[in-house]
Image 1 (cartoon, rainbow, N blue to C red):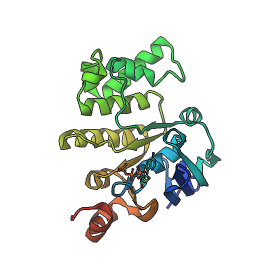
Image 2: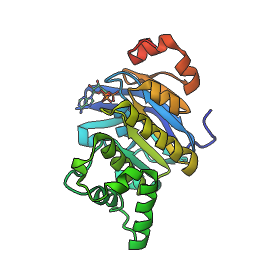
Image 3: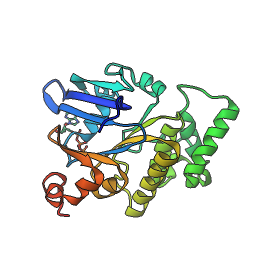
Image 4: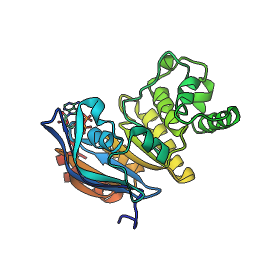
Length: 250
Ligand code: ATP
């Protein structure tokens, strides 16, 4: 059940690319405060488009929202700017594990505060918080991010988003291209952030088994629509659904 006023409330969102390629059709979903919600579905189901539409980043991909509404704690943010969303507490890690490869790990983290510069002391404290969450990054803080492993680059991208102290993190395929052990480590950290810092998370994943293990609820997308939704525990029991919509036999 949605709270009386969910943190994020998406209603009947439709989106297209290049004016005619329909990627989302009347998508509705919500994220309550303190929830981890997964967006599942095969390749091309519309998961990334949904996150990009919420984050107001579709125009950079020649896409547009054509209908629907996005609310943040009851405020209409359908046409907010990406910066305005960060200011409200919505951070995103959407473009793969994008890092500035020639900057150091620490410089990448600092880049997460450029929109709202901090004092030297606040910056140091914030960095220490990120190093506490991802101890590997402290060891590699002076390394060029491009030389870090794929998993460490994913941690840098998440750490950079966390530098803005968000209430909601939008995350696209954090498992992409990573070894199972690293994927597990990243999801474990996401769950700790959720439990210990009340961070709400909307995460798109093709790796439905790990996402369902860590999420509270999930939506399964198919051709830009919600095909199914429910508690992660209930969805993970439904083997036929996994075969039909998620592309594997459980
Ligand atoms: P994947 O995991 O493969 O990215 P997805 O579920 O995230 O899959 P989307 O990337 O949102 O799916 O794609 C939804 C639909 O929109 C697909 O049919 C895709 O081909 C199309 N699409 C995505 N990006 C663009 C784009 N920039 N231009 C045109 N069509 C696009």
